[in-house]
Image (cartoon, rainbow, N blue to C red; front, side, top):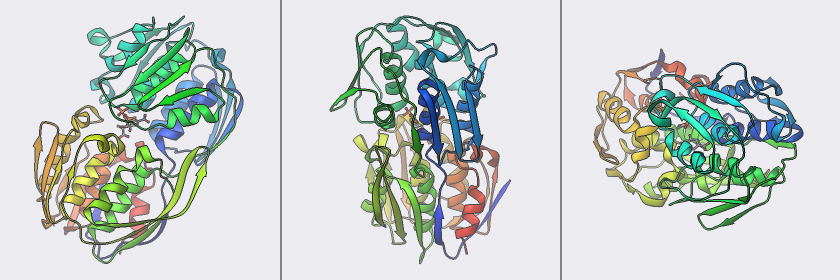
Length: 426
Ligand SMILES: O=C(O)C1=C[C@@H](OP(=O)(O)O)[C@@H](O)[C@H](O)C1
Ligand SMILES: C=C(OP(=O)(O)O)C(=O)O
């Protein structure tokens, strides 16, 4: 159980753990590359450790010590048929991206995960992979785990994705890496583009044209060194902590500021908060900066449309900030929240309501009225890391004590979160 007391001030200098999306991809691409890939700043969270364990079960040698990882890649077809099921744990990114990789492999494999993964939709990736020729099955005609994959020769497709999802886009592009001809994916709004950037960093040629990415089959990856920046999705909790407690300021060092991820910075700016980007640089095709965050009174705004994929994982903590903003915050076009680790519309609304927030659920988002004084309560993370952390941040502004049950879930993306929070709270 995580205990959070009301804070009188947040300040100091912090670093957040490595980016989860980039860490997964560094291990996957390193395993498929020829030669060694050394990773610094890797996120040793449960999700990325699941990715490592899956590749080890396919014979790839991987050394990991905290945030340093060495992957001994054997080339695309250097994976061996796993003799056991591949356990993806709680990680949607692992199962969906690996589905694309396993679809190209000349062997049979089975992927499964925890209770939450068993409820998340898989046909969104299985459908297009089947169109390419992969033989994939699962419960309810491939909608749910376990997924059984018999890979083989694939044909390139032109896929129009109904959802702006980096997991769908990445799975298809990875399958396309070994398909006959060209594979292209078009999405309705831009989702995070770490796959595109990192494939290029590993020597792959792809073409980006607006919302379409195309890749030619038969390409090879070349092992390399990767430095992973801090995760802006984890930094979001620290940014929100500052905005919850008047008089606060914080320097967050080494944060990835890829434009497909910076919706949170735009939202805080539009709400009237101050975030200065310092020391901007580019590391392995990914922009990075230090963020100087200063408290200011926030105003409610509408958040909808193109920005949603650029802040999808930050919506729980944005809802928390909105409880302290003046006026109404409306979050729309965010139905994807319903298919994350939990139904995040339902869990954000139920848990923030327990703290006294004025919040209601809508079909595709939520509406929050503020500013509202919060009162400590017993909260459940429901096994969802982002719900656990968002409610801990709410606790910083709540009278008395807030208790978070099932806080182990936080290890999925932010090991050390309670210590970091403690170190910046007064
Ligand atoms: O590709 C990725 O690394 C991720 C993509 C997003 O999911 P979707 O692709 O389902 O939008 C995001 O929510 C998830 O945390 C990580
Ligand atoms: C949705 C998330 O991750 P995944 O889809 O990889 O489980 C998340 O980290 O908020």
